[in-house]
Amino acid sequence: MAQGLLKVQVRAHSQYPGLSQSFRLTKGFLTMLFTRCRFIRHCLFTALLAGFSLGVHAHGDVTPQAVDTTGLQPLGEAWKQANPYRGNKKAIEIGSSAYNQNCARCHGLEAISGGIAPDLRLLPEGTEGDEIFAMRVRNGAVRDGRVYMPKFEGILSQEALWTIRAWLDTVREQ
Image (tube, rainbow, N blue to C red; front, side, top):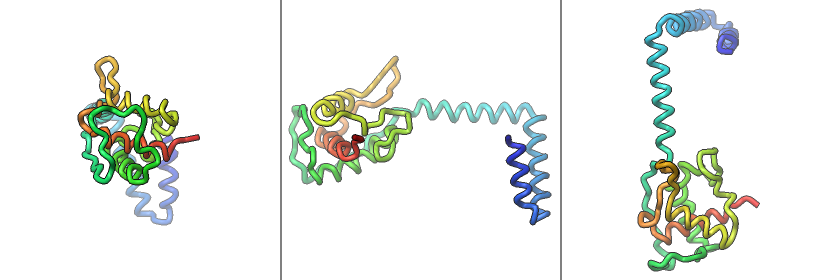
């Protein structure tokens, strides 16, 4: 497949003979490196493997960003059972920013998951979805000693977390 791609690229540059010739020389040099030099192949493979494993272990390793909830009604210490900010335009605006800073890395922009973490647009609406959301953001998710999602209770305020839920209600898939 790579050879076919290289031929297409060489043909695309046939109107520039000097460029095509230098491309063929580069292709030949790279081919020689990958077929004859075990050390370079080993180093490249190790680097790729290390990069992949760093990406795998990074999941859940998020530094929470502060959320300014100025202008919203304070909720106090006791955790609310249902989202008190549902439909609140100011809370939705704050929640959008809070989501992008604290959640999008794993759950995706606009809450569209790329497969790493659950797609939050699919949370049930109303109190049922609020209960699921509250349980997960407060306690996080740890399985077999691996952090899949950090706990946010005590890190982000109840107000900040409910603003995220208020925003998620606006992007919910029907």
